Image (cartoon, rainbow, N blue to C red; front, side, top):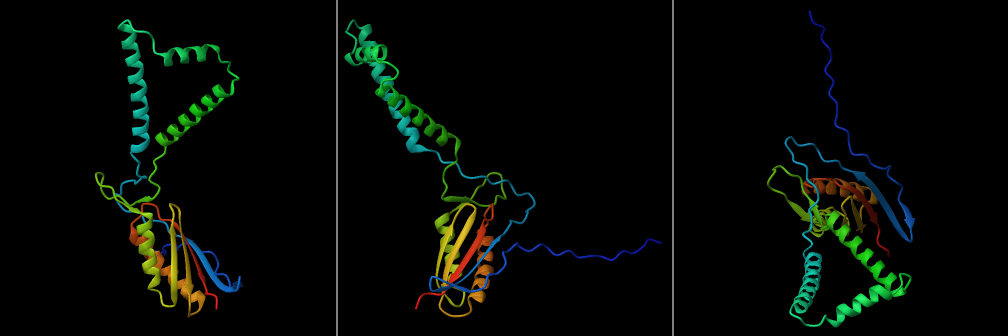
Length: 225
């Protein structure tokens, strides 16, 4: 006979929250705040979703235009010399400056620093994704990617927050790692309003379908007067 063992049901861990502070006056207004992090649930077959990369059209066009003009000017001067014409005055002047001007000259140092700074800027643009205002969403397909703008996500969460009874105004700032919410409640207890906002905004953040769920910070105040 096999020995029967009791079956234990483990509850899913709830999001970690900071202890609820007491409602205390701050600058003439009562304040209640909380912070929590909601981790995305694992989905079978879900593709990794990284950030969107900017195509950098303006920097690429600027660099291409500068190189094109420089190459065209140099080729024109070389072709002019091949046609038994005198060397361009700009090229003669440039050769003389490079041969006679010392390295400690302020103009040489300024030109070198400018070239280094420009090169570093181009390297940063080449190695960073950009498009910080676009948040990637979860991927269920290898050929399809979706994203949502921060402003659009803030509008969605703000509309959800305004549905909570007692909330007068809501300001939402959506970042890549954190959502900051500041609300004003003109009636009801601040703890109750904040608890309802936590619940509503938790559902709202989950409904956005983001690839990386941001932390949530909620602060509720009583308006002055």
